[in-house]
Length: 403
Image 1 (tube, rainbow, N blue to C red):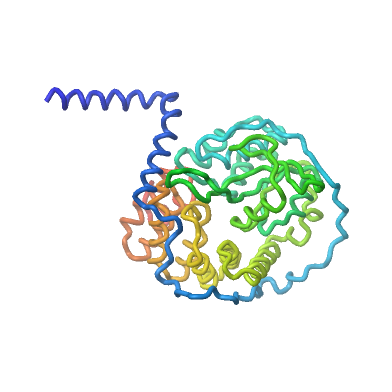
Image 2 (image 1 turned 120 degrees about the vertical axis):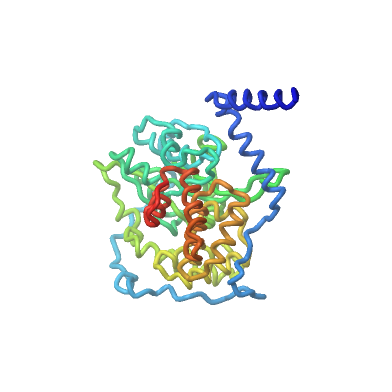
């Protein structure tokens, strides 16, 4: 009996100590990391599961849907603009004050470094408090970072495009604007947390003579070099997405920098065509198939997008992939493949328990199956992870219940 009482009192004491802010800050990420390793031992898959609704293939398909869409027939051949001004051989913008990222915080940390270039005085925690209040949330989308800029740094504007090229990045830098890219990288570890992951990087310079970009890496350090080739390869996993920031009072000359990609619909059309060309060159490239699906999804071509995602998953996507990108949930849901949504969200949540996007789409899948109680539980769990998640708030309002 005394042992039991002692155990309870010790537990209460430890729980109280854990609530001390400095103790919690230093222990929280270590506990999260340990739990991640345990989940990896329990669910030791290296790739995401193949959807049951996907057709098994012995040879990867060699044909893809035509990128032509009715809404874009009038803009697929835009009027040529002026000839671009030749780029300098090298550009080195002033390096903003660097900041080491907190646990799972490369997005807010990278954005903080980018905003400092324009005189912003905050830090990564000011950003993460809005877009990912829970340190265990392992992802921040580019859209969330843009939301922060527009709502908390309103004297600045931010936007993004996909299908970027090395040339486009260099043009932004030559005009004096650093660029954020999202790319893949490989974690080297002896445990189950090794393998592919996503990471943001702020580019602040380039040098053609050595074929390198100079970037601010919130994990590795300031002024890190990455070759054009290595960036382009790692960048493909995220549809060659890039984000740019500029002062509202001094807008960037976006039309001259982006060219045809200034029009968002044309940008997606061009990215779709690029994914198609890459698949024709390498039909077993899972990232190009995924990008094809994401660009089809933009045009609400859900069934075609689902087919492209099927092929990407059949070829094998890293287990972390749907921690960062959620297109398959949406495409499968709108294609009526509800069970495939649940299978994929469950696989994601096995290894990434705090993924509010997976919770959201699992909730919508349960709602479609008629299990409203399970749907509400998932929507509320999403809000426990991120109380500022607007899509989960909308879902609960749609069902007429509160958080």
